[in-house]
Length: 106
Length: 119
Image (cartoon, rainbow over all chains, first blue to last red; front, top):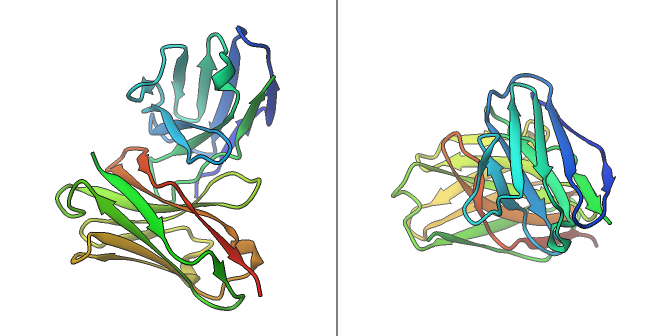
């Protein structure tokens, strides 16, 4: 069973700054990795899939990279609406666990 | 565009069975090779993948829940359902249904259904 580990648990940044979030898989998931954003009271929203492809309607300031076991989500210039919790999830094999999340806060 | 909506009780007693249904609108649940999944999120914690069912009926379960879990599809009602038996307070969570296509992420989610396990 694959285990997903995110770091850091909390990231404190200022608007306009760059944020870099990491996700590590316990074994290779190739490029079958997604990033989700979640705000209070809402369902997770798909941001990135296949490790680096932005989902429909996602701004260009969000980018993903990596393959195998190491992945990164970068937000190039944080906007106020980007302060949220971010989760990674692998869909290379069953079961399909999520990481524990990274809180991006001011 | 496909839309998903969870329905079910908000309160379940310990040791009983939690039953939820996800209604799919905007398309047939069997018209495309999608997986239909359940995810839950305890208060203040991250999402936990529960399990998925393929449109053909094949199921994939979280090993930690497998002994208590059943996911089925109702062809006549364009719905899929979750049953989790012998619940405890640890099963209290917002339960989401979602869709994914093959080796793809969960790209459409329901709004979620909070289920509390309590006497």
